[in-house]
Every structure is written in C-alpha cells, then in structure tokens.
Length: 89
Image (cartoon, rainbow, N blue to C red; front, side, top):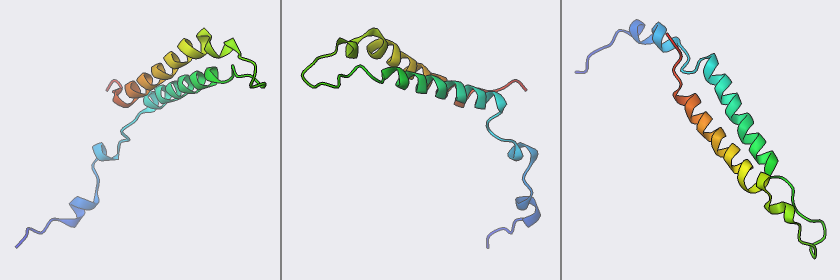
C-alpha cells in the first residue's frame, strides 16, 4: 500500500514556494531588452522605393545593415541576462 500523505502539508505552500521567481529588477531588465529589440526593428524600417524602376541606396546604409541587427541581438542578450539575474538577498 502506498503511504498516505498529510493533506495539510501538501495544501500549505512554504514561504519559499510563495515567492515569485522574478523580482522587480528582472522585470526592469526585461523591459530594457524589449525596448532594445523594438528599437532595432524600428531602425530596420524603410529604405525602399515607391517606384519599382528606381533603386534606393538607403536600403543598404549603416543603420539598417549594421546598427539595427546589433541592437536586436543586444536586446536578446539582455533578455537572457534578465532571466538568469539573481537579486541580492
């Protein structure tokens, strides 16, 4: 026969179980990461031409080819840091 567990012990979570896994600092870091990702995608917008017969060189400028992807990748790195961040206890 299986052991019977005390139902009161199972129903009452401990203080450690009640605590949220993320603190206030984690959420702030997450918001910073989301802002970096959004800024990177916003910087990628544009550079096209309304006339299909005209080529626009702005499509290949520094902002869209280099800066925006770096910001997006930095945002993802910040998100990873936010997940693993442990506040001081």
